[in-house]
Image 1: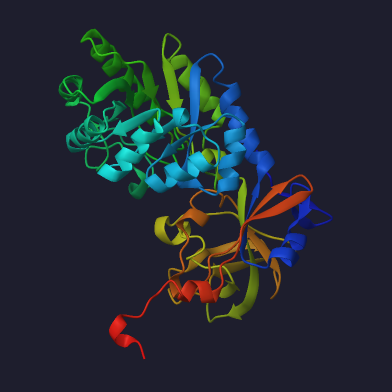
Image 2 (image 1 turned 90 degrees about the vertical axis):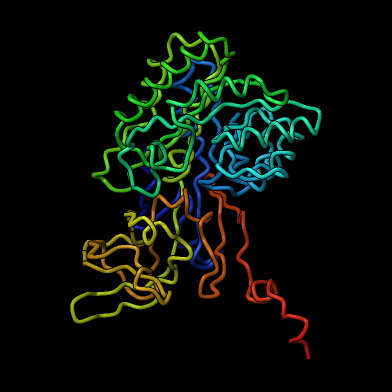
Length: 419
């Protein structure tokens, strides 16, 4: 489902002209389509009606309160990886009973806070963490519901920095060691064994690795139940890819869910899914202004007022985002599309062909709703950019642009530096 459309050759998100947004907000800024986020969630929900499924939005993809609230209102839970994300989920209206806590380095204070909120489940990634959770739970006179995150040693065929299900990765417990660690957990007074969890990576564009990993998971669940462990929840993680470019070939949400439904047609318990990117990526654009068109000896550079600190994915992952001008013209030209940061890596695309643009024109970097604003920084003392939510013919700023005074005042002089 594409949200890119032009009216009278001017780019719109839903019924709002991007040029009108830019007049009100100033560039660069993120904007998100609420209708698209809702449609993506409903695609999961409607294709999983045969299962007792809980869709838990992975907040690491986009943790803006307004975005979380859109999903909370539809019944979504949350997959969190820090106390901060847990607090964000709760404040946005997601019940603790729908929150799972993932991550490899949960600290004792974070565990205590999550236990005090009575969350649905901890996804445990090591024996050390299990022992820590047990200690904290006992000290609070409570019990922690847990699932172990299983590492099946399956290649997700994705970027090496977002592959999480191979033996060489830091995530999870080897599937070979799982029966023993479940036995250890069953002897702990602060632990309730509830489920099995698996997440093999992000931006998967092929369903075959899922098939391999999920088959191993089902086999493990059958073994654990046969050994007397009360496994009532299967957590399939997330990671479904999106089509950043036309040749990406990512399966649809419907195709993925149909595969899940077929795999678990005999399952009598709860199913948890943790989508992030596939819910919000396509819904978001980073809107920027052309500052200069610079003619180099070999390249034409389109220099934007947005930079790698605003959208890190191209620099960090060599990610390709479709980039579209706000003004649709017939003439096309090849550009290196770059930002103002003093790094050669501050490049959004090389040798990119698009409609010709001029200085002061607007462009939109698409599929930026996931891992965009959440990964942004103030590198080069650049300000964090605003975020805007669009719904029909309405829009609202859902995060204000910071200002220089507030940014600089985060620093303090040492006491011996004072006048």
